Length: 145
Image 1: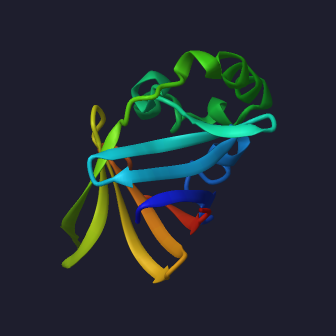
Image 2: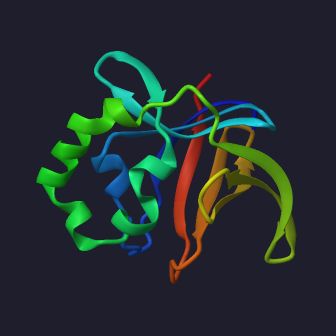
Image 3: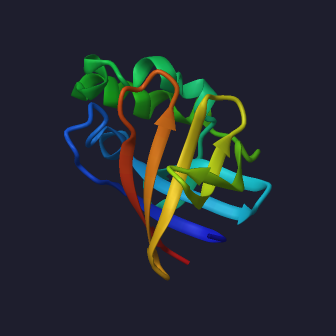
């Protein structure tokens, strides 16, 4: 798991399908089990930057229909520098999910766990399990570096 991973949604008719990509989501970075950047976003021609998930109001904004509007994505781009952080905002643990012990990213300040299952040495399937979300959001991570 250690390293930088490029993310992409795995479309399953979930309300969040395509949303992260619209906002410039790049992926995740796992430095060590205690140092995880759960949300990396692309910047123009630069290294991806880590954003603080709790400043993004994930629980409220990301499940609303208006979050898919182009104007909201543009506004997000304008305020993105205010959301940046150098501090890790999650950690890795091995937890049981549906009876299988899996690598799990536990967000520090939000009721969110991302559970990962290995497809191959460079590909992971992830699911975001968030309190209040009726179904998990699925995504793919591919090792970058």
